[in-house]
Length: 456
Image 1 (cartoon, one colour):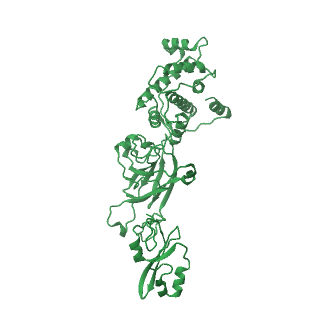
Image 2: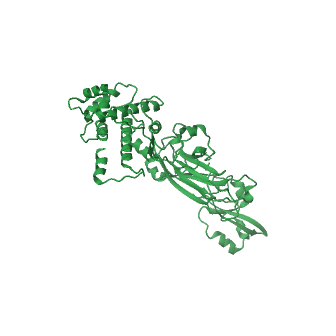
Image 3: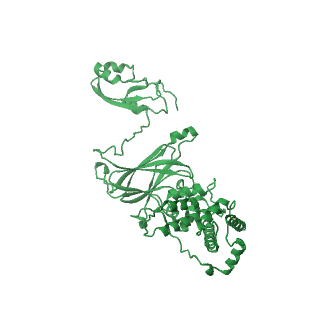
């Protein structure tokens, strides 16, 4: 590597091909190729180099034309010498068109911006099945097969498309010591039950049971990786990812298709399938619970923020399998504000009964989806737990939840888990109550908006 041959070519060096010319040389047709060493200084000294004698046999006008634009580091050589001296040639297509195509084709292009974020959308490659499914997903719908041509060679009809995954802003990040991430992508056939549907983010079980139909040639730390495919008509899911999980970055995914193809980003539609919550009157509440409440609440028969904090921390202190630093005053105040219907700033018997039943339900869900029994939720366990609780959320909301409720190691402690679900359930129920015509839109006046945002 970097050794210089006796004719002044640098081994292992990337030269550029800058021109080619067929000339008449001593009565015969001869192919010349023009090369450039980007570093300059060292130039080819063999036949057809700048000062070689071969140029004396070329008519002056042609010699002047060929050599007038020569720069330092640029030189001519015969095509025969080129084949002998160089071992690898890389050709970059400026468009996705096939090199052997006889006519120019205008390809259809779609571009998507995406992000990988720790704990929510940076799942790593297929080698990490527990988290691979949380990566962004994009659907391609291939409907029209390619036009047949001489180059098809009797192949089965198929749809050609090209995927190009590019990292964004990595050059700018170099000043902070960050280099290119190792990136790639995989392509999966959409299962029959999801064909024609939008707003569906495929889950872990699908990727555990199905192999990819195609994938990038390799995962590599380049700014962009691209691969051309030809698949039968149908619907396919593209999953771009970094090689390892929790590597953050922004990316652009471009889809080039020879024929018209439908493409869309796959993301769950925001919805909540909440169980019926029976709000009991005071007379319907169990006598044992009333006695417990009277003991906890004190003479005023209402539970304040500090009393709620004491109660909850005393309860979770008995559960040694739960990882928690305890419920903070801020968390308890938020729960009181969310559950307080009469504006007293405290929880009465009925309000506390509702909160108590919710927390018991959340504890059951937490233990079920703490798969590694660590006492806390990992970010992907949290996502599965939210779905089990009846929530389908967009990737942007999952990013916000991890940002707001996860610890630096991306784990969600039990107290944060409870606070998150209390807030989610309360806000969904509030919205559903106001959405009387069920069109997914509600209208607030200024007072309602301030009450909701300031005191929730």
